[in-house]
Length: 218
Image 1 (cartoon, rainbow, N blue to C red):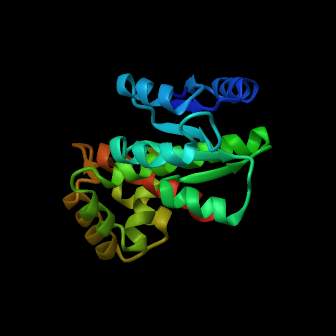
Image 2 (cartoon, rainbow, N blue to C red; image 1 turned 120 degrees about the vertical axis):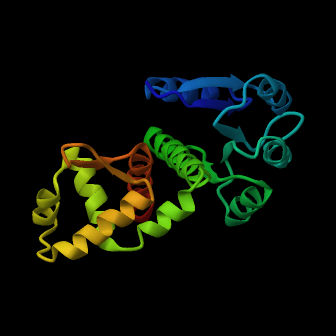
């Protein structure tokens, strides 16, 4: 079950209910509002991870709502939904605070891809903000250290000779140097049996690498 809360803001009841149904079927926790004013009220009680906001609504429109959300809820990602798929509208939405853009009519898969992309970016940003993350990322500047982390993530735990064989490196001094570097950054640990394994911080780094790979390939 996916736990991220998503808020759908759209005055079109049929579309709003359809979007809610699609997202709930995908495992997301979803709330919905018919107006921007209702959305502002709802967000005072529960702040969503992601908001899907319709551009044209009675009263306050989506463009007017966006900067308010970015000001008061900077951690919430926003996807603008609009029937006008012009470059000017897309640029205006991004300048007003939108993180992404969906044009009506959109397919179910288009919606889910946009939602997953926004939540992955949010997860990556939260990882970057954690203490010592800059030092840990700098530690990954060397490809051998990245390969060691990936090997440990796949195997669970490995002894020194297993690591050298997996990496295909005969220079044991070089591998030992990089293992010490990873240990100094608290990305790996070694138990009494001399087995190396990822620390919780190392597991978070692996998640970051996976997210980066997805962003690069998308």
